[in-house]
Amino acid sequence: MIQTFADWLVYTIFGLDATSHVGMAINFFFYDTIKILILLFLISTLMGIVNAYFPIDRLRNYLTTHKMYGLQYFFASLFGAITPFCSCSSIPLFIGFVKGGIPLGVTLAFLITSPLVNEVAVAMFLGTFGVKITLVYVISGILLGMIGGFVLGKFKLERYLSDWIKQIQANANAESSHWEGEKTPFIKRMPTIIKEAWGIVRGVLLYIIIGIAIGAFMHGYVPEGFFEQYMSKGNWYAVPLSVILAVPMYANAAGIVPVIEVFVAKGIPIGTALAFMMGVVGLSLPEATLLKKVMTWKLIAIFFGTISLFIIISGYLFNYLL
Image 1 (cartoon, rainbow, N blue to C red):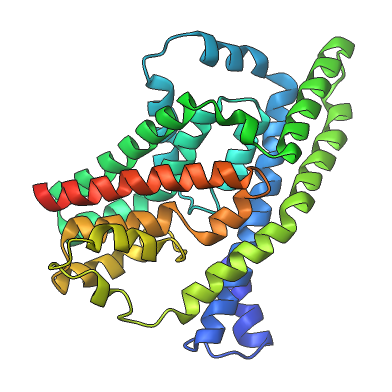
Image 2: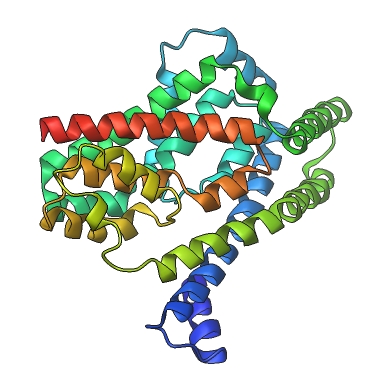
């Protein structure tokens, strides 16, 4: 429905050519902006309802005081794997988790895996590369989320969350306690929950517009064949360079699979191609722009740096094994 509206607006009302760079870029901008704003509002409302009725303090305390032997990171990564979100679309749910007080390492495990593993991309991988490489793709995506979330969680990075999200957390906890004490009925809680959800949307609106605009430009204007010349088999630095080149890009896993197929057909090693894919879908400038509302630049740099390192190591490992 959103895609149909974006097509109608851009190609019928604006009269832009669907095959032109500007047409594709503007269509991408409207589609992704509307999708993320709707997602953010719905998820913020849902998490507001959950926070009002579910003993979130107990869950947070349980996750932080009990030894689960890494299962919390596995479940967060697995949940990320089954949610069909790109890196920017994952952020509304990430905000909801942080608002609910879920430990940051667990939330980051979800944020890492969600864009990396996608059921549509899995189906495309099976048809294009076969079972072996598909299993490598899925397992490595989940492992990256688990290891990345675990490592980042050990750094105790909560202090680098933005003041905006800390205030949202404080307000949510205070309201939940007040409602529990007063036994406030649901019908009286709902207007406050909706108002807060809309406040979250307004708070990140500018960041969403800037981030998606960057992604739309990259989507429409990166020249074909630009990357292949830097990712050839003979370059020892091809894997780290492919990740660096991927970060400014923005696409979901399903959208980048055909590009990876072309890369492999042109002789680019599968590990290098997978590292590029993980860089594109797992890290992006639009994502960094959106995260700026939730994290300080220091936390964003730590997050991007750690995941980039893991992807590079994975790329070299895949080139050796496959």
